[in-house]
Structure formats: structure tokens, C-alpha cells
Image 1 (cartoon, one colour):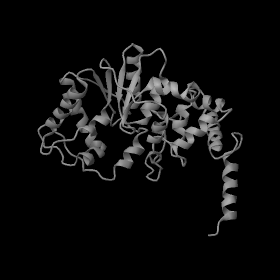
Image 2 (cartoon, rainbow, N blue to C red):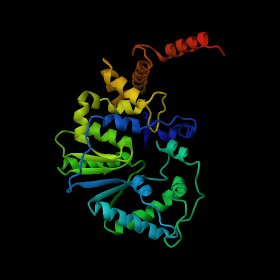
Image 3 (cartoon, rainbow, N blue to C red):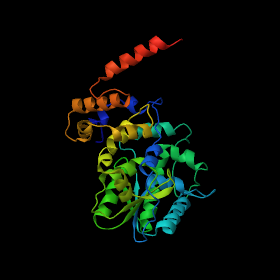
Image 4 (spheres, helix red, strand yellow):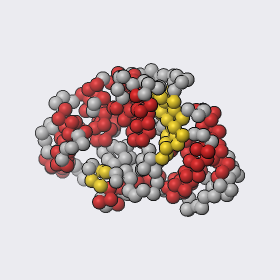
Length: 318
């Protein structure tokens, strides 16, 4: 069972992942910040490709008046044209209980289709984006697509829930084996994990991200940032807002603040520890939040909230 800050997801209230007022962060800000000092790269022809199935679902535009089976053939032609057979395609898992992606799925569900019965010979729904915004329709279509891709000789992996971690593992395993690899995905989460987990003795990993419109070398990004910044990336990304957290500061501001902060090694280590107690993680996280609001890491959030409230009350004219 997937966990959320150490708690089993099944034990948490469903409303935690369906708050429509939860602030959505602009993850592309962080991707651009990571690549600021890195030149665009070209991918070696011998590279293996790891493709985000979610990206693939949207990048191929369905022809009007075609059946679902014919739509699947469009995907096969696209993969054959751009990646030949040297690709691993990774899809999200569906219908496996609560997921950290539930909030984002809920956000996208404003303009969706009704539930549709998927059959290979049946004409595909006319509005592709609306169709794919309905998770039940997507979860019914993906198995058909996976079967067609596999029948055409392509390697397909389906994650138990979110595909990001499995994609990163696939890419790192290929790079460890001495093979250059290109990752095709839009998600900043994937870029952050690749840079954080990359090791100098691996073959290079190249990532194409639609958010920054170019190909970047993970090795070059890690080198430009330096080991100290790389070691803080997971904390920077999570505390500035991701699929399970919402925060009022922009990612660029948080990135610069935590990168330049002194004496926060303990808090970072605790936040990244697999064995730290919940109380330790909470205190470390609150210390970092206090730092982001201009206080000392020794300040408590309760004191910060009180002083901020008193300042607003004393200065407001309304």
C-alpha cells in the first residue's frame, strides 16, 4: 500500500486528496531553474528510450471517425516512427485504491465525458482530452492500448499506481548497465528524481521535457548544481509543492532559499530518512517552513502565525 508521509493511504480521509481548493504549484519553474546553466543536448543514436505512457496518451492526436483499435494503431505507428523498438513504455496503474495522484486527477475532472464502454470496433469518442480526463475511461482504454503495443513487439510496463517511480527505476537500471538512455516525459517529478539518484559511474541519462522544450543531460544538470544542492532536491521539490503538498511560495524562491541556507543539513537528513519518526519529520519540516518565511529554523510555526496575525491586525485599515 502506498504511503503518505509514512501513513497508509487507506487510513487517511479521502477528502485529504480531493480538496479542490488545494493550491496547484507550477512545477515547470523548478525544471527551468535546474537547467538554467546547462546547454541543450543531443541524444546518442544508440540510446534506449523510456517513455511516459501518460505523455504518450496525449501526444498522439486521434483521427476523427476512427475506432479504438485504429486509435491504438496510431500509437504504434508513432512509437515505431520516433523510437523504433528500443523503447520501454510505462503506464500508470489504475483502480488500485487511493493514490498520491488523486488530487491532480480530481482537478482535471472539470470537463469530462460520461463513462464509456470501450470496444476495439467501436468509434472512439470525439473529444480526446475530455475522454482522457475521465479516469474510468482512461483505465478502460489503457489495457487495450497496452495489449496492442505488446502485440506489435514493444516493451510495456504498468506501475502498481503512479508511473513516475517505475520510470525512474527503469532509466537508472539501464544507465547502471552501461547503456545511454533517454527519458520522454513532461513531469518535473521525474527530472528531480533522476538528478537526485544519478551516479557518476552511470551512462548518461537524457530527458526530454515538454515543459522546457529541449533535451537535457542529467549528468550535466547534476554537475552544474553540485552535490550539496543535489542532496537537497527532494526536500526542495516536496516542500515547495508537489502532488501531495500545497504551498504559497513559488518553486524558484524556495529553490534559492534552501540552496543557499546554512546549517539545515540535519533537517534535510531527517526529511529524507526512511527511519525517522513522524514527530522528527514534522519538526524538521516546520523548521524549514519557518526559514522560508524569514525566521530562524529554531522558531515555531505557532509563534510565526501569531506574530504574522498580530502584524496584519495592527496594520490593516479594513
